[in-house]
Image 1 (cartoon, rainbow, N blue to C red):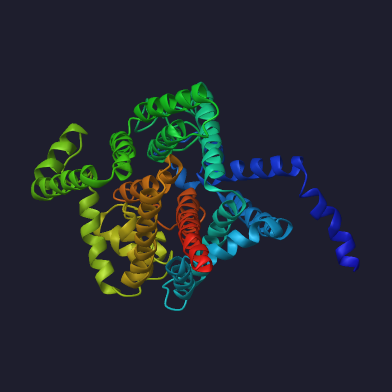
Image 2 (cartoon, helix red, strand yellow; image 1 turned 135 degrees about the horizontal axis):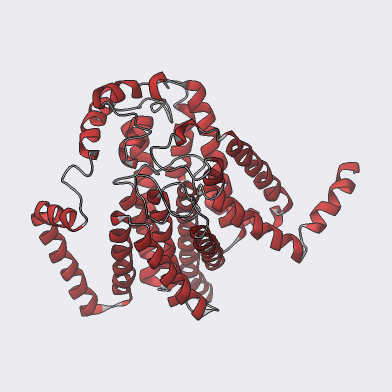
Length: 443
């Protein structure tokens, strides 16, 4: 009774409008922190690539992550009546994803660096918990609004940072490239790429309340993609804009839908036949060579290391530790102090092997199929965001490493994508089942 009396004011406060506003502020602030915005740039004093930014102490970020885990857990408690139904559905609808997370934790047993793997596993679970809370607390439409607000804040702060000497614009190896509130254009570029796609989806949605601001957000995002001078981000942005419009094919029916599928099949066979020539041509347009700035040389060495521990890997976050881990071999072979393999798929296989990679791949594939089913049965622009995010995630991880990494915004957004799709799919299934139930009762 005493505990209930003490806790009651907290639960009462959690129902107020002020608490809900603070809750949204908490989410936006931590989305910025998880995206590595502001704090890392300030801690490095605006250092650019080659300035020795790896020597800076980012320990304060660990305190932020721990604070996020604790606050999120407390929010689950005080908002339990609101989130419990959606949370239970999420838990019982994404088996492959949860098994993947358990496999990550289990990899501590065979990890080359069990202490690092254990800490990283806790970090991944905490990160996923934050994403799961967002989905449990808000419907997909509200989630899109939160993401639009997040990207709007990032854009606004990045534009302001451009006018701060030595911070918003790179002055080192990539001098002149806009990096906004981030330490590198290759971190900033993918963020504004997804911002561009999210604003476009929001613009097309029926719940878009501020069209002019949404147009401004979309145009500003695109301008910042160009300003970042990240050729890959510009390519991804164009491809996502095309994809968003191509998804409308799912609204067609009958012969039109069949013709559209036939067209996509023809395009697939064309690309699969001539992909090498197309690949070289596109790289030429982007000013890249066939080795993707040395990445293919890295991948050749990494594939060899993967084959040494093909099934289980070196443990989650158990490979890349400079001279203190298995990464020393790669460093000596390439004479390059690499932080990762610049490929999310290869890094995932390094950590958890083919088994872990297959589990996450199945979770993403099931999410893709569910999302297509939802779009096909009750098309709405809000349902296109998970599909667009899947393609975005697959694209950026071809040259960068952000697939299933603890304490990153990509892990949060992947959780949102997977969990939200499962909820919408279950709602669709219930809606289709209800008429059958009603008709059987009438009989």
